[in-house]
Structures are given as C-alpha cells and as structure tokens.
Image 1 (cartoon, rainbow, N blue to C red):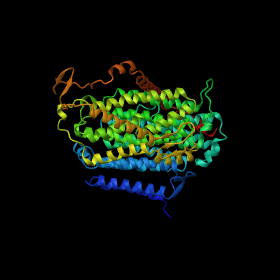
Image 2 (image 1 turned 180 degrees about the horizontal axis):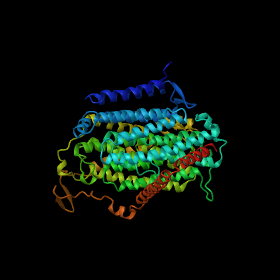
Image 3 (image 1 turned 90 degrees about the vertical axis):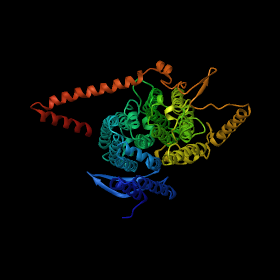
Image 4 (image 1 turned 90 degrees about the horizontal axis):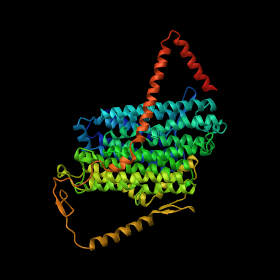
Length: 625
C-alpha cells in the first residue's frame, strides 16, 4: 500500500498524540510536540506545493462498516481549514512552552494532560476535515466534541461546569445530525457524498426542510449560533490560556466547515433558497442570514458587559461567527469570499488577543479589567499585539479584519439587503466600543502601584504573539494571499469565485486595493505626527501620577475610570436578551425533565416491553417512510 500525503499527515498527527501521551511529562515535551505540529504544517504546505490545495487527494485507507464505505480525502475546503487548525496549534503550543508551562505546573496544572488534549484535538479535527462521506463526518464530529471537552475541563471547578454544559449541547447537536443522517440514508440508500448529491434533487420540500433544520441545528450548536450560543463563552474563557487561543481560533469553525460541506455543497444554495416559510416572504436562506446577524449583535453587546478580559473575547468569538455565516449564505462572489476569509482573519487576531491577555495574567495574576490599567509602559510589546488584534477584530484598516468585513458589507449592498447590512454595522459598532474598553482598562491610563514592577512577557510567549501580529498586518496589506486559497474553496463548494488581486478584489460592483488604502492611511499618520511633534514642547508625567483640572494627582488617587465601564450604556441596553436565552434554556431543561419522568413512569409499568417495542417500531417506520 502506497502512502499518500494525506496518510502522512494523519500519521504525523497520530505520532504527535503518542509523543504527548508517553513522554508528555518530560520537561522538553512541549517543545517536541510544537516541533511535530510544525512538521504537520510543512506536510500540509507540501500538498499545496504539489497542486493538492485546489484538487483532491485521497487516503489509501478505507474500509466498510455495516455496508457503508468509510473513506477520507482532502480538497481545497479541507486544506483551508486544516491550515488554520495546524497554524493555530503550532503557535498556541509554542506559546505554552517555557515560562507559561512552568507557571501552570507550579499552580497545580497538569501540563501532560494539556499537551495530550491539544494533540487529540488536532488529530480529531484533521479526521473530521478529511471526511470522504457522511458517516466518517459524523465519527469525526463526535471525536472533535469529546476532544474539546477534555481540553475545556482541564482547569477543574468552573471550567468543568462550563465543559459539562458544552458537552450537553454537543450531544444534543450530535443527535440532530444523526437524525439527519438517518433521513438522508432513507432517501438515498447511501451516505456517500456523490449519492447524496444526486438524491437531494428528487427530495420533497418537507424532507429538505427537515434536513436543513436537523443539520443546521446540529452544526449550529458547535458554531455557537443563536439560540445555541450560551455554552461557548464560559467554556472557551475558562480553558487554560494557550488552549483558549487554540479553541477560540478554530474549534467552533468546525461547525462552519460542516455547513459548507453539507448545506452548501451537497444541498446547494439554490435548493435552500427554494424552501419558503409558509405565509411569509422569507425562505430558508433568509432565515439563516437573520440567525447570522442576530448572532453578530447579541453576543457582541453581551461582550461589552464583561469585566473579565477572557470572557469579553470569548463572547466576541461567537459574534464573529455570525459574519462568517452571513457572508456564506449571501452566496455571491464577494459575500462567500468575505465569509471564508473571515475564518482565517478571525483565527489570527483571536489567537493573538487571547495570548496577549494570557501574558497579562501571567505577569499580573488577574484578567479583571477593573484591577488593571497603565501597563503600556511595562508591557509595550503585549500592548502592540493587543492593539493590532483589536483593530482586526473591530474590522478597521489596516488590519486583515477590515478586508473580510468590507467584502461582506459590499455583498449585502450589492444584493439589495440593506436591513442585514444595517444589522451587521450595528454589531461592528458594539465591537468597537467593547474592544476600546479592553485596551483602555488593561494598558492605558494610570498605572496601579501593585504593578509598578511588572515586566514584559517572556520571549517564549512573546515570539508567537509577534508572529500573529505580523500575519494580521501582512494579510491586511496583501489580502490576495489568503484570497487565493478562498477562491479555491469557493469553487469546491459551488459558490462563485471572486476575482482577487494582491491588494484585494476587482469587481464592477466595487473594488478594494489595500495597498493604496494603507499607503494613504500611513501618509496621514505621518503628517499628523509631524504636526504634533513640531507644534510645541510637552512635559512628561510619571505614569503613577496624573494631572487634571489644574491639579497634580498622586498615585493614591485613582483617576483612571475603569470600574463598570459603559455603565450608562449598559443601563440602557439592559440584560434582557441574555436573560431571555437563559429562560429558554431553563424551559427546555424543565421540559426534558418532565418528559423523562413520564417515560420513566411508562417504562416501570408491567407492560414496559410493549411500550419500548412500540416506540422502536414507530421510529423505524418513520425512518423508512
């Protein structure tokens, strides 16, 4: 049997897991695992160099289970998500080595289990991304869910509770996907992608609606789409630092991968667009678009209320997923490109932001935004990374987040969707407000006395942060680099490919050249700097002191306003929307508890076998029919 490059990649990933398992307790284990992630990334890049980035490469391994052939293969869609997965794993693992690792172990953390969980997550994601049929997709999906649970639960206490909440959602989502697979099999007699593609064309509207609901709901749980979003922020925020960076960058995007493979590629946007909601002017695609924009708005404004930097970023991760889905369901060249490009862009700045916050925690011992401030002089490089990251997150030039959001905005205007455009812009406004709170309360203003001796993060943590910052800027200046990968993905999933240039996109409906945009922007900054520094003399004030209203303020007077940031706005916005989702979640739990009591009573009756057999026959008949 001749091994293909995909086989080599999966074996490389499996070997990384074995190294973490058997020698993960050694002092050099973190560096060894990091090097192995680098080897996996090189294998993936070798695929692209040999032309597999835009084609298909199959694994030599395949076998049959219950009459269904299990197979694995890589195409441009798989390759794109694998690139983000391995890049995030490499830099997160690198960040964990050295100083963070020693500190984590000193605090009682299990560094062996951390490296093991990371390696297991990467292998599970690669197996999912390589799915060659719907059965292997489901197996990979479940592996990713349980691997994620292990990484989330590492810290114990609150983290374990958040992980349990996640796995409860994940199991419900998994059952929805399993129901969808049963329905697909009853229609096509196969779970092979080609057979499903053919069967979809002859399915009834009712059956297509059921499949969209089951698969959309199941995949939406992993993605954190409303109303299945409440698990994500606490689960990601309470994961140990580098693990948060990795999960925040790519884990929930496995849901978007599955949506692209099943709903977009197999079912087709045209078929979804034809599913009308009775007595309304809305179809299934409109429904997904509005779910996307509500996913942008509600979690984003929830982020503004957070006083823990990790929770603030985790809530934003939910909202950014809405931009990705929104671009994909608009389904024109610009929208699809914007949604897919945002997957890459978000991974870069979300990982950088989580790492910067973890570096601050490493030096100060807290992520509480009300207990920080003025660290820009003590941690200038971490400040620069966080600044670059929040500019990307806010979708402002010159960073890469601006490009993907601009593409989504432009597509909404081109397709005549002004309400969706307005909703997306409202989400961006909330993002700008909350990220200002993040950088202001950590780095700006008056330095606290207890942090006077704080030092910059060690280089084992600083190096991957700076690499991510460089990627954020370079791909903002030259977005054509990742847009080349995105165009290949668009072709694979059946979306129109965008015409890209090194600086952006070319289109009769609107073009973007970031080289010119950034050139003009920097020229403006240069002119402003010349005017500022030549205007007159200034006097430096020590950061522990301050000056306002004609008075010098000493260090014992807290002049910087940080506590309850945006209190007035939060009073106006209120917590009604998050409360409503919590109420909905509790209502579902109560309903399930009631149904379980009813079923328990039926099962304990003398004729329990009869009820069980009747239920089984009913389910089988429904699937067959």
